[in-house]
Image (cartoon, rainbow, N blue to C red):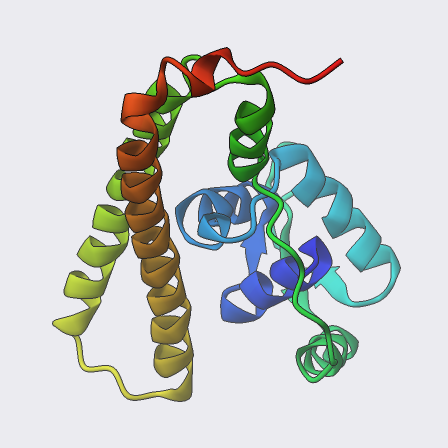
Length: 188
């Protein structure tokens, strides 16, 4: 996934200003694709220059007003092309498993405490997703967009469930290893 496509998706859902997009990224899209305020504004300029989006016309003077954008037909075509594109899965790039592997060489030190912290963060995210799922279950949901959004939410729930279970296993496995494994050093 790429930031331009995330922005095109968000703008097709609802034309927005850069600030509104940033807030939406913080609340929803950011759960699985994050971007800074600066990245979003920079990408909006590129998308506009490429003719994929345009600034919405406004009756108010330009000075001090927020520019709102909408997707042009060429932008929608680009997003449709990208959705149908073939792409291989990418390997996980979370530093925690790499740190765990490194601990196998240099010793676990305080890693169990960090694993507990990560577990708490993943458990909190899981509860947030479950809260969204519960809230959304109360609404009538049947459109294609609703079903697709529910699938994305399910992916988030399943990923956080995996992390919590894996971290429980890792913590249980490493809790008693502070001695021998914690002293292991690389061979000279």
